[in-house]
Amino acid sequence: MCQLPNWHSGPVARQFFLYNKKVIGTDPMQTPQLTSKDGNMVVDFYPVKTPYGDISQQWYLRTLTFAPHGQVSKKFLNKVEMLLDIRERIAYGYTQTRDNSDLPQLGNPFYGAC
Image (tube, rainbow, N blue to C red; front, side):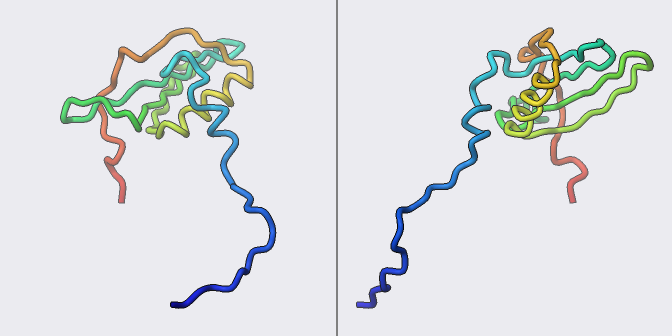
């Protein structure tokens, strides 16, 4: 039987991402609507309903609405990206104004993916 020599002499350091532990499960609203300090930008997060009728547990839709002109930007995010985006915006002073958990949006996050 072949045995490897002892190549490691120190304690094993476990690496993990601290931001995942701090972000996941800290927000009481799962898919909130966030409004900027001056009210000119509104960020909505929605759960995604697939064409098969089920609600995805991994994908969410983010919409950015700019108040003066009504311009909208849409993007699909996975759960970790959404939670990080929510945390960053709250740190910038955005306020939670509504919960969009009961408003799933029909969409396919893989549409147009190459």
